[in-house]
Image (cartoon, rainbow, N blue to C red; front, side, top):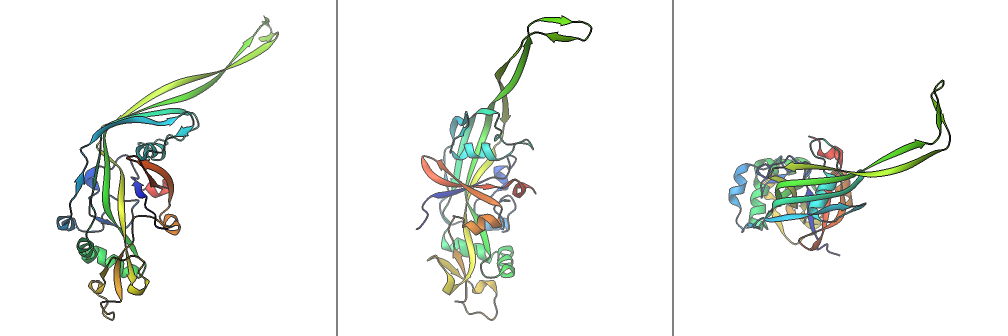
Length: 279
C-alpha cells in the first residue's frame, strides 16, 4: 500500500540556521542536511514554483503531565537537545510550554528536468558512480523554520521532611519519641529563549541509482550521464524513490520513525539517534 503521509525529518540540532540548509540541494546523509553534496549553482536551476508560508505565531504545550503531544515542533522539543543539555524526556518534567513568533514553511516539487540536472552535478554523479546500483542521495524539498522561541519547563521537585516529636538527650544528640515524615512535591519553572531563526524540520525526496528493469517508481532519468562506458542509455537510471524511509534505511542512518501531525494532518517524523547528531 502506498504511504500517503508526509514525512518530516527533524533537524539534528537547535543551532542550524536556515541559511545552512538550501532548498533544492542534494545531501549524502539527511542527518547532516547542512552539508550539501551538490554545488551551490544547482539551486539556480530550480524550474518549479517555491511556496512560502507567511509565517504565523504559534504556541502550545509540548508536554502535559506525562503525555507528549504529537505535533511536529513538540517532537522537536522532546527529542533534540539544546546546547548540549539533555532533552526534555526526563520523568521529572511535568509540563513544557512553548511560543514561537513565526513558524515558516518553504517547499517545492522538483521537476524531472531538475532531478536530471541534480544527477548531472559532478559531486552527485561521482557519489552515485562510486556507490553503484542502489546508492541513494536526498534532495531537500521542504524547510520549516522557527523564530524567537520561548520554552518554559515545569519540573517536579520531590523532597521529604522528617519531624520528630519528643525530647532530645544532649549527651548523644539523638531524639527519642515517635517519628513521622511527609513527602512534598514542589514545582520549579525554568524559561529558555532562543532568538533564531532556526531550522527544526525538513523534507526530502530520495534519488536512487538503479537498473531500469529494477525501477519501482514510474519517473526516472536515463543514466548515460553517469559515464558508464559499457552501458547503454537504458542500463542505468536515476529513480525518484519518494520521501518515505524503509525499515532498513532507518537502521542504516541511525534514525527512528514516530507518528505525529502537522497542519492538522497525520505525518511520519524521522528522529535522529543521539550519536547520529554528532559532527
